[in-house]
Image 1 (tube, rainbow over the protein chains, first blue to last red):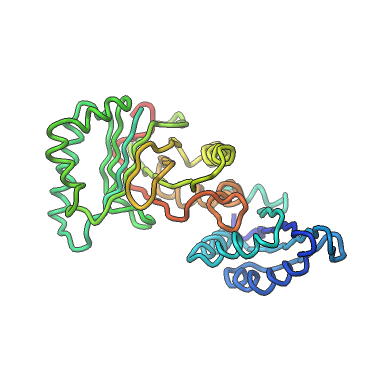
Image 2 (cartoon, rainbow over the protein chains, first blue to last red; image 1 turned 135 degrees about the horizontal axis):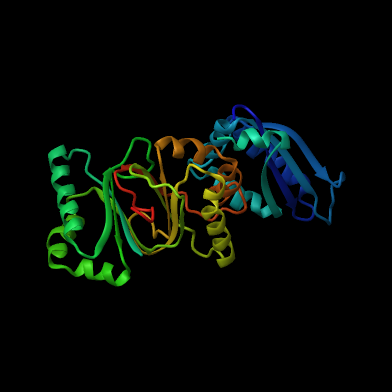
Length: 116
Length: 224
């Protein structure tokens, strides 16, 4: 493999009424560090497209990274120190009902990504 | 099969001759103990993380044989004192019943032995631990450079953490570890989530021992 694009997607279900606050926190406190680790924010989506006061919005953050070496750079870079632990498991956790991170690729890149 | 793995960290100022004398004592004790069925004592290779200067790995028929080995007079007189202060800067130790393992139909006369010693965090659910073990032990199915492997739960631990698991592999060359093992998406897109604080699956303590050395005789292959 060489420089296939790998997508990293955070799917976040916010606590009722906390969707917009979480978006702000993610944008201001998480995203800058992710960019420093080589991640590029491609899309930010919210469902449904209305801020719910008494229901949960689900937010999708689609990041891209070029190549496996850069994937590891984004992963390992975040494990030094405890800042990201605190962000995800304390600060963000207070605004979240559920979250999942996915690592994805275009299906046409699977052959080269797995040809290691 | 029961196993004992120790990672040995010499003081930085210790002379090569002193290290040689200590490792020779361990080598003699290993080879002279009838309970030891296979052992490995080799210097680690550059690039290990918290991996020590030497890997000392011993295998026994079962836990009874392991206990009997520790009771031997020459073990208590020559081996135990080395681990009671002064000889090593520190050491990491894990004793364990060999767990889920496998081997490819290729005999490795020499190669690279790698072990990952880790701790699943307290209060992790049994279901999460089982899924983690299932995915970790599933790596050889997708990563062909892993020739022999075993994933085990630790029963006795000492060192920086109360180690819970040992994940051992053998490769034909170091490139099998640094290349395919690290680069395969089964690793970074699936298994690594258990190690990643950014993922909801995170259960593995960030302090772990990733270490490897060359071997002249396989300790994981069935025909070694």
